[in-house]
Amino acid sequence: MLANAHVSERRGAGLSSNDGMAATVWKGYISFGLVSFPVRLFAAARPKGIHFHMLHKKDLSRIKEVFYCAEEDKPVSRDEIVKGTEVSKGEYVVVTDEELRAIAPATASTMDILQFVPASDVDPLYLESSYYVAPEEAVSKPYVLLLEAMSKTRHDAVAKIAMHGREHIVILRPSRGGLVLHTMYFTDELQKANAPSLPKSKQTNAKEIELAKTLIGKLAGPFRPEQYHDEYRANVERLIQQKQRGEKVTAVKQPKARPVVNIMEALQRSLKESGRTAVSRGGRKTSKGKSKAA
Image (cartoon, rainbow, N blue to C red; front, side, top):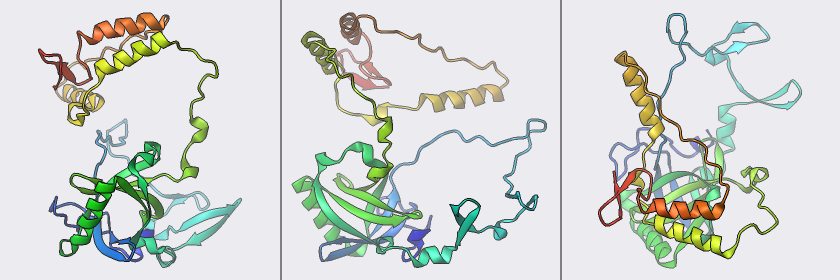
């Protein structure tokens, strides 16, 4: 990995003030003008899911991954494998881990802040992964200084950092618990060709827009992420438990497609239904009509 050149990316070895067992993802310095102070990055989120193993259908034994050489028509061991990139048809340039470490940029150990931008300027489309930025306990004053200054000016910081085998452009932003870092996609990584094209002709009228705004107001409320859950994962867990117990698998009823024929009629019906049902998925109405987490 590029970030191993000057930085210890010791998974499982890092300590944070928030989590004594958290794994350090990156360790280095934040450079803010002439001020520099040490920090560590910790993963802020990880996706959860049910992991399935590949099994042989005949006897349910585990299938193992085998590295195979097509030229010699035989399996090869890991110590026989090198990294290479194809530069022309059938021609490869081999690169060693030592060579990659030797050319790691300075951002492998120092995160230079390049500029500060208004928090509202960053399109969420660019955001990739999230990390907590924790200061080393012995040097916490410059960390707090940067955090408070960014909070008061409502500005985020743009910086660059090398880790996980590549260099990232990142956004540092203040939060209630400290600094948070988001790796970002570069402009040439966005799939702009997949962006939808809006119809050129105007297809809505003022009354439809007002009804839509009223519906938004009915469904509006503070963001409470704890009330949302992965129903698909819960269904998979239930499926596994049912099969373990030898029970019949319970199918989930799928909603029927409801094509919109008359927008005004659909909006009016939506407004009526919003007064009788929960205002959001995973929540239910209280007697006062407010959403309550399930």
